[in-house]
Image 1 (tube, rainbow, N blue to C red):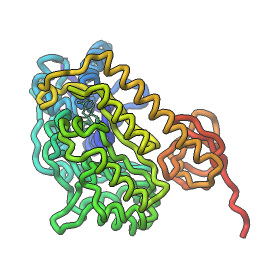
Image 2 (cartoon, rainbow, N blue to C red):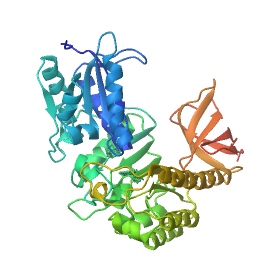
Image 3 (cartoon, rainbow, N blue to C red):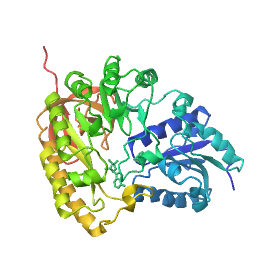
Length: 438
Ligand code: 5AD
Ligand code: SF4
């Protein structure tokens, strides 16, 4: 049976921050059509699963979610959006007939039309990749959270041999300068104090006039009402001098850089088609740290890439020891359909990957805890983002992207001076520091 008139919706986003951004814009698109977000815990008429295809586990999750939705008393209209939709297309509805809509990451501005089609019982699939047209077709921004995402660049031309992104998100493309500034102003008007510029290769952003991400950051810096600027994710090869300089002299640009290295072995990096070496990566970080000595460095790692030897894995541990990460994300290699690495010989057995991941994460956890502990006793500013679990408690972020719990009457969305009291691996505790009278 088809739901002929869906009134309420729920968008569930998985994967990266770009998916979170897309999910928000899908919600705004559906709201502009008169639908309303289902209340927390309520069963929505339309459920959008905004999926991730980066690793097999993430990609398979969608099918268990669909199975669960189909078991409801009244099964909702189900839309599969995101990167699994792009990668698997019509195959999804064949495997899971309950799915009424399949819509790719470049086509979700057509969601209302697809909902109408599905309501009529027609096949509703759109995995087109029109260049940027979705941004022009989306309704104005309405969110009010203190920290907002803004996608400025999409897709990837780097073709790392393990990665599906060039296939699911398409070629590298930068949104126009003026459109980005307009959206930033709309976000600030709606209550954003912090904007994180997003892109699969955000530091590859450039426009027709030769401006790079640093020019965009400087333009945001001039917007009144905006307190903090961040950007993610960056590729080492696109860390320009201008961008590094921005870390030295744009005060609103927060001291945090997510710069994935993936492996410490040059042989593995070549096989991954990363086009940087361990050394060239370290040299970039030297320059970044010279520009902004307190910068927090974060990274991504893959263990068990095909052919990775014990000695090559040790090189990854070595580069981690050299860099000293404030935060990191590490994964077991997962072969993805259509990528060159999936065809490579010498795939690494699961137990070897498990052991390597455990050793790497143990080291990264020690570094993360040490980074947090080194801030204890410091006075700094927090942007208050959401309520904590205990009454009166709020959670805010430091400039280094650490979460801090504190009790305060200061409103969410405001910046508060704190003293950091104690640190754990994933968060710190603080107390409001009273500014001394002049
Ligand atoms: N297997 C495991 N991890 C992967 N990543 C990307 N592709 C794969 C894969 N096939 C990781 C990389 C990337 C992060 C977003 O996900 O570390 O930086
Ligand atoms: Fe997942 Fe990559 Fe798609 Fe983001 S872009 S949702 S990480 S596959």
